[in-house]
Length: 336
Image 1 (tube, rainbow, N blue to C red):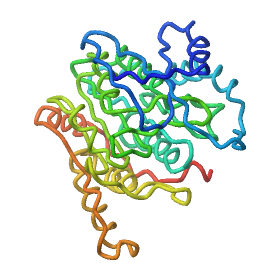
Image 2: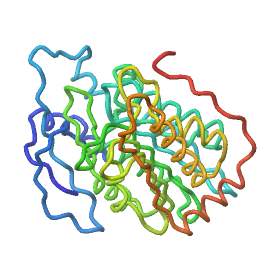
Image 3: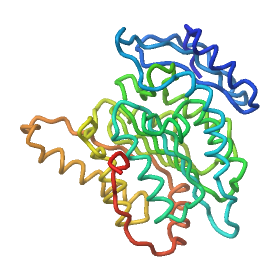
Image 4: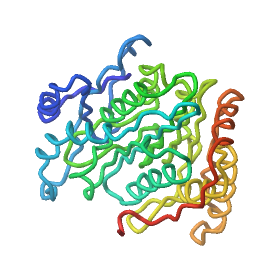
């Protein structure tokens, strides 16, 4: 993993706090464009921990929570979330899900990951197999932060329970994205590490038991994640090309356009992930073309899919065994 230099005092303290937990590898960095790339670690070594760089904040911008309390609570919150993972169900392909909402600034990402939990537990037979990581002021006291550390620990916990030969893990990442393919991870003023495609690939590489994977990245420029993640046993969906933005985030939105098309519409119509992607891609294109603000000049996001016969065969066997379930209504978590 590339190393980000400039470790802050706060990041060092945060690492000290959680150093007593054997599995705890702490992330810390905020969204900046400057970074230093070092030689990647060997494939069989654990991923190197990026160093934090604190984003500048207005001097008068004070958080409405105690950052130190949030920091000290993380080990217990993540332990509790992972302890809720149920044992695998024998005799069938099990699906495990990790939903990751990176940006605390807008409820749209919080709404999406909460719906991912509800949708996959109720319609896709994944009850007890869903982990939700999110940065949102509403959930600081009850849910673990979405961070490089919590993502790595969640995949590790699932790898300890899954059957490597059969089971599938689905990772849903939703946040803002930059044109250099950085996924925004922020809960200001906490210094959290930003996610790059190589970071996600490294997290999976250290868990070889997680052979069968679906990675969905819902962010601007998310097509930049494909090359780092694609292989014969992985399906990668992105909400946009590597050089295009996607639409539907904002403080007045309940769910992104791609999130609604894929999660709320397509996956309530079919249990086939490749088929759901095709439906979502078409619906997004239609919505973008019909947007009054586009004025005929919009650059379509063009959602992307990277797949293989092997992962599609595995997904087909899994979806064929699902019991019939009714559609799951979308209710924005932020409005409950």
